Image (cartoon, one colour):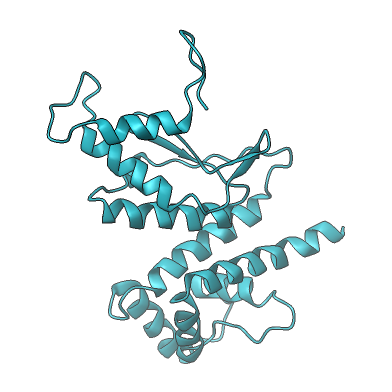
Length: 217
């Protein structure tokens, strides 16, 4: 339901009916938004309505839309990742594309997330994206070469390289044999990354493990 200063509230069914009655192939108005785009946007968010959002006044909302702009609403980063991927998929199905350069994220909370948690989350999100790509891309080739040459390096002070950081992150998980010290470990993590839900769960476990020592003090 939408407020209407000039009359009774506008209900969702009225908006859907108006969209169905709009004729395609017509020139857009002053806002430069065509009928086809409005119908495509409505299709996208009908398909993603099942994803978790925020409970506002007893109703679930996972998006707010105004013209061609959209805000996605979720209670946590993991739900936002899943919702964002679903919106991107259905956008492509409708012939639209998300503008990544103009996409921003905002966290609204009474308890600001720790800087360590933010860095780990970003690191593993990017790492998962890389692992899902072809094994011949430069980042994966460089990491594979790193593990091949690591054993032959001089035994001095260890360098804080990306593989070292990633191994430090994942090694903090209790009751787990996950690590990143060899190409075998790298391939095992690549197999996990192919399943986005499993990778999201792994990222959550790593972040929680990193925060656990801090919360005990």
